[in-house]
Amino acid sequence: MNIGIVLYPTFGGSGVIATELGKSLAEKGHRVHFISYEQPVRFEYFSENIFFHEVSVSKYPLFRFPPYELALTGKIVDLVKYENIDLLHVHYAIPHAAAAVMAKNILKNTSSINLPIVTTLHGTDITVVGRDKTYLPVIKYCIEQSDFVTSVSESLKQDTIDYFDIKRPIEVIPNFLDIKRFKNLNNDDLKRQIATKKEKIIVHASNFRKVKRVDDVLKVYTKIADKIPAMLLMIGDGPERKSLENKCRNHKYGKNIKFFGKQSRIEEILSIGDLFLITSETESFGLAALEAMACEVPVICTDTGGQKEVMQDGKTGFCCSMGEIEEMVEKAIYILEDEKRLQVFRKSARAHAKDFDQEKIIPNYEALYQRVLM
Ligand code: GMT
Image 1 (cartoon, rainbow, N blue to C red):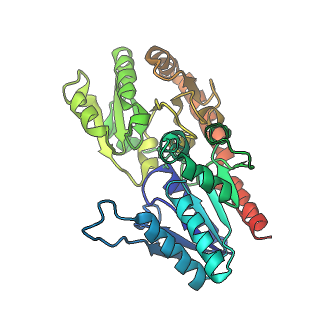
Image 2 (spheres, rainbow, N blue to C red):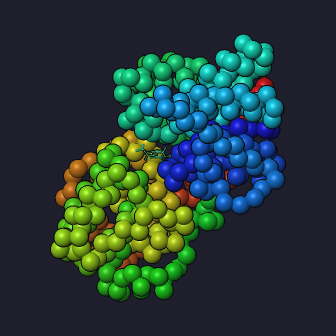
């Protein structure tokens, strides 16, 4: 198959999933065309089956808001005509699905070409940005006009149906990872550089947006550190990082809190972790938590969105009520205070993460593409 994949090129989960999907499809012999404004961060080698098409938006003094959607639409039309793309898979509804639907209409009306569109909903395109009344009619229309729609969890599917009054079918295909890459690397040297033998290592990774409630991460960590010697490693970057980092500079455990920024080999840091903390207001899936579990790190997360579908509550970690700091602290200490118990959680986390191995999940997308092209 000749597949176009429209994606965000960033460290964010939707970009990671779209890139890894494309890489895996290319290995299976499909031709993959990544379409984005920058080369995807997870696409870091040459493959004869992968092509990258950069969307560039021309600057003009009149444009206060450069029209990225139009540039993307034009690029899709061009590629479908001249690269013979069989189907287009767009990740994240805004604005990718809108550009795809517009391209589909242009191709149909000007060239009688049918462009099948698969739209994958990832999370905030529905639960945060999508709920903005300004976008609502556009997103609803694009979901209805796509040939197939998938969501990364049952919870996100239900949110989509509820918020947008969607009657069409939505297929759930959970996110995935490469279990051979995401494993505990037994990196004891690094562990000893970061923490002493007595100290536990708590890790958080996100894009530091408001929805992640990173202040809660600090609150939970502080109360854990009051009871158990612990370090806090913060991975990623985003709008809330600066103010949190400032707070940590004057914090009583400030010297034990480290901000590492964006990391392309996150499995190396996850491998030295004892606990992964994710305190989001909503999380459609929680790919970072799954990556932690695969590296044998138990997870404390909120019970919002699709996280309960990724976790086994009480086995791979605990799902706690959003904002309930005491509950999260209590569960974290329960896991960390007993080394034998921690080992049991570690093994369960790894075992459960294997259910999300890309070898098991990606064939669902291939089967979907076959149905699209029938
Ligand atoms: O808002 C984000 O966290 C970024 C967003 C993305 O598009 O990268 O993440 C969403 O999609 C990921 C991949 O499907 C999911 O693992 C995340 O849970 C989801 N984020 C939220 O729902 C907040």
